[in-house]
Amino acid sequence: MDRIFKRKIYQRLLDWKRSEDGRTAVLVEGARRVGKSTVVELFAKQEYESYILIDFNKAGKESIALWDDLSDLNMIFFKLQQAHQVVLHKRKSVIIFDEVQKCPKARQAIKYLVQDGRYDYIETGSLISIRKNTKDITIPSEEDRITMYPMDFEEFRWALGDTATIPLLRQQFEMKLSLGDAAARLKMRDLRLYMLVGGMPQAVNTYLDTNNLSLVDKTKRGIIKLYLEDFQKIDATGNAERLFKNIPAQLSSNASRYQPYPVVGQQTETKMAELLQDLEQSKTVLFCHHCTDPNVGMSLSKDMNRYKLFLADTGLFVTLCFWDKRYTDNVIYDKLLSDKLDANLGYVYENLVAQMLATAGNELFYHTFPKDEKHYYEVDFLLSKGNKICPIEVKSSGYKTHASLDAFCLKFSSRIANRYLAYTKDLRFDAETILLPVYMLPIISDNCS
Image (cartoon, rainbow, N blue to C red):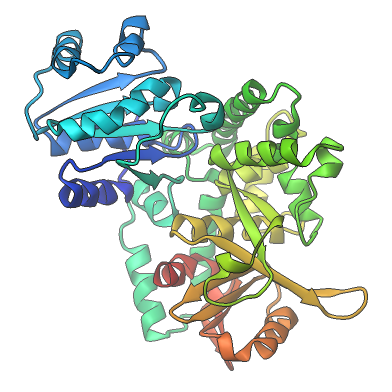
């Protein structure tokens, strides 16, 4: 059974429609299978009198050639209406360019279509090959962009019929209530289910249909294989694929940065930059850059050569962790769900936090500094709040000590707003440190974004 899930991006599209009123088009970009086409078509059905959807994955030669010559827009609109048997109404209809990266000329046409002003325009695309597909065209300035991520924890709970959890967690945080670790364990089990299923609509649909995590894993493996095929198309050497598949190994090694050269061998700086750009534009990964001077305006001290890589969906990350197996069986999933797998899962929680922060609209930064000649302190994530910063340390187990967080806050004391230890227990307050259950992270990240 294919379901249409409630997604928060719908409200952002509604805000765009109301505020822009045809002055710009909007491009919804995101990884493949994240739900772009579904939510955009639902929006078109519910918010317009009529719409035309052109899927450039399936479009024939005539549909592609339609955008080569824009001298007669009246003829173009007539042909579109005739081909799709849809009547368009001035300022009450929308035209959707689905997978627009497959037809660069259609994307270039946006400038003139918006100037014409008759209809609204929504594009969707996974712009993994944007550099190759747009070298001979002009990217329209009349184009707003919205990044669509996998379903976040609240959207996942909505899909399961739960609309109360996140509002109640928000109240708990605002009231600074500790409800006890027994209550927290129940919420952590809900969160671990989200970590295992992930936020890809197809995987969530499989879970709702079957309640079988092995079948969910099979669905996720199919999505990952699609991503790997995409990487092969843009990089026949396989290096982009290798960089992607090596993310769990590098995070589990607890290194202070992603090391690309051991994975792909010696490359020129230009080639390495292209590989990393392809990864970033695929929207399948999240870059977390080292901030050399943690302060407001962290982009000013962003180290482009020092970064960590995370998967944009933690459910896919869990499956990629067990990619050496033909499938991840229910025994492993059951142990992960009950928090009994004999493995250090700190890096899985770190990936989850990265996903939560990025989905809330935050650019990802971290900071390391020397502890002694051989060791260093590391703060996992940094957020801006007003004219201050909020450091976050992530722990999957003990919480009695948080040396890196303490040392960072001592060194940069005048810059600190709130300090957080994200962990797996109930909400607590340890002197100046807020001990925050991981499932509450979306609440503070929304406030900081």
